[in-house]
Image 1 (cartoon, one colour):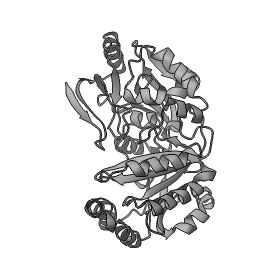
Image 2 (cartoon, rainbow, N blue to C red; image 1 turned 45 degrees about the horizontal axis):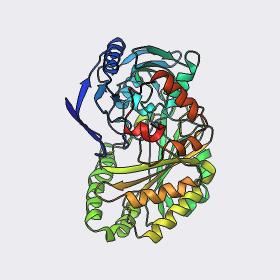
Image 3 (tube, rainbow, N blue to C red; image 1 turned 30 degrees about the vertical axis):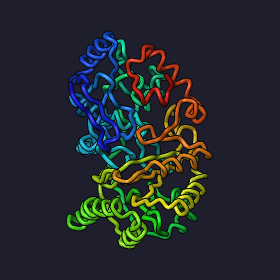
Length: 433
């Protein structure tokens, strides 16, 4: 028996049985045995979700024994990996084959199966999240069956399981459609928030990957533009000293200290944010795509993120800023804004519409409840869809309104798991009892 806790400390489970299969066949046998005993199972990755999507009620399936690249075809870009493979290990492994994922999120602590199952995404107006790069997967269901799923085989399960929130079974392997390895030129610079919002569509459309961070209580935003370099341009990465200062000292150690000060003296937050935003400096470098996409984030926080119709994001940000200004809340963490292209994955937050993501954060020692509740009210008016792995309060009735294929997903779930072996409190919240 074991105790499990997620990275943020928002969820935990005690006294759970732990299964550690090392193959698909062993996973199938263990899952079938547990389900026949009436046990509730959950596959657990790195625990980077803030919600309870991976909290095991009784049995925790750890996929550390399925954590390697199984096959890689450089000619087609098709790479099959064990479901427990961490993104950092995956990115480095792909680089050894001169391959890469076309788009990534901004951290690499998750496992590949956990990242796709919760709808992890990066940014790029013409690009989708990680699940859109999945060409096939292997799924173990509650009766011990092993389903091979793709657009051609078990297509309905494929549409459901790419973002399946762990409710359909245990993914044991994922086949990814990769691209030739590429370099990105990163350009980071602070700009007035009004300028960023006024030119948001142009910035999103004219860059391969665009995002920005706005510090509440200030008029400044940090913009990040990442673009593929022209043929013949080589890498010129951030130097080790500048990289340590920017990414470790300022972004983690100093940021932790300023947030601790904010927790003790909330009244100082506007002044802290003003100083922090003025300290932002421009930098430009060229490096391997995965090194540009992913950064180290060690300060513990709470996060809520909603996907909005892209054309509504500027209005939502104006409303959110107005609420912060009049509420008296003190927010030391920046607000992050990213974009994604529409896709066809049933429970993807970008299903059927070009999307902008707004992610809000609060330091873990500060109360987030009032801030997050106000955010949910604002985004509800534009049909916002919550990230499956980040804090929200929506239930099945509300989610059904926002996902056109919601009931199709539930039908697949009922067929694959009629006795709800993969149920927990979170799936009851979002999919109904």
